[in-house]
Length: 120
Image (tube, rainbow, N blue to C red; front, side, top):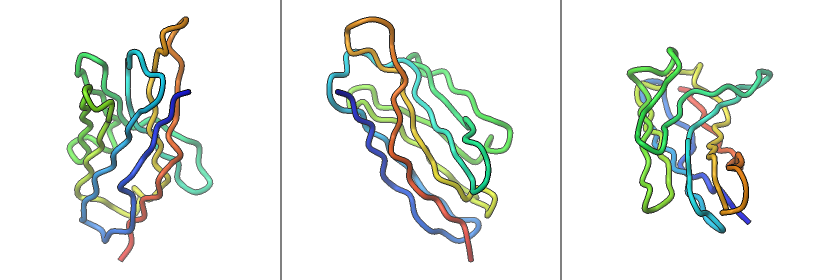
């Protein structure tokens, strides 16, 4: 059994910052890619950033220069540092990870989602 537990969401004013965390636990043997999706009200869930096991990072244009992804492999945790937040960043943020439990190919696991609201 594998779990991803997120923390760090909340309400901030425009221009503010937040850092999200997502920790994997359970029968984790290896973790490949880790990343973050977000889903705004009435919209689909979109990938915004990911980081490979070797540390290569990728961002969508809308968050480049404002969001930074990082991971701590020893703690099986991925972070998302967000600055210069704007109302359009309001969404539920979901972490994901490609995890191998030792049997077969890696599978995608998801966090429970954390609400980020940007409002004055």
